[in-house]
Amino acid sequence: MVITGFMIDAFHEQLITLWAENEDGPFASIVPMIYTEFQPNSLVFVGINPSFNAKAIMRVMQNSEARSHFKSEEEVNNFYRFDRSNMLDKIKDFQVIQHYHKLHLPYYTRNWQIAGQLENIHWEQIDIFQVRHSIQEEVISRLNQATNKSFFSRQIDLFLTMLEHIAPKVIVILNQKTGTLLKKEFSKIDSNFLSSRKAPDQYELCLYGKTIPVLFSMHIAYKKQEDRISINQKIIDFVRKYQ
Image 1 (tube, helix red, strand yellow):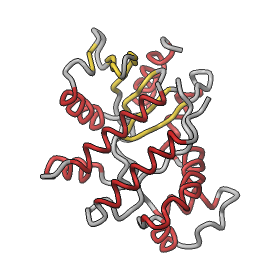
Image 2: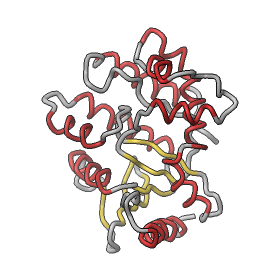
Image 3: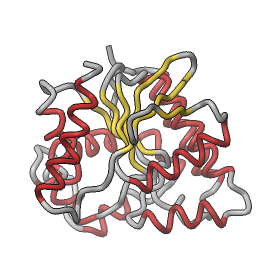
């Protein structure tokens, strides 16, 4: 079973409407994250927001059968410029690009390595916010400084709706910034929404009557090799308990 049809379409339509209402904002000039179909009962990795790098998009697409899709960074930037009038027509194109990103972008290597140690469990990655911006600190800063937070709060609502439909087997928070932000935002919803277990960094998320185990992990990019192995092994051991 995958999440298809009106569910994923409705998610994207709500994102497009939100972007259109905030077109003059600092993050809405680039199209929001467009997801491929989700498979329920998966291992779900959670980040803060997707980055945007025209060079990376070109490199990924050059290694796919769609390698002639973009011939320059300018073409990439123009293609990703938000324009509500043609967004629905381009959804499938964005989904194809995201499919190849998941397969080939170095960012997802960690996810594939972890899944490979778990009998190739199916995994998804979703972000709390769908703004394409490479500097997470600026996204968080804008969230904290915004006088009208509806642009961000509505994205959190959509994030929770998508989690409901995916009904994850396990959730892994990929870095401490994401974890800190989620704990803060979840506490605003309900103090019992996220409850800690006795083990460090392990929680339970109560979402629409379903209890989902959650592990708060950390970023490994600047860690020593032995530390990377140890951090990822903790994720593997945690997820394996619920397979």
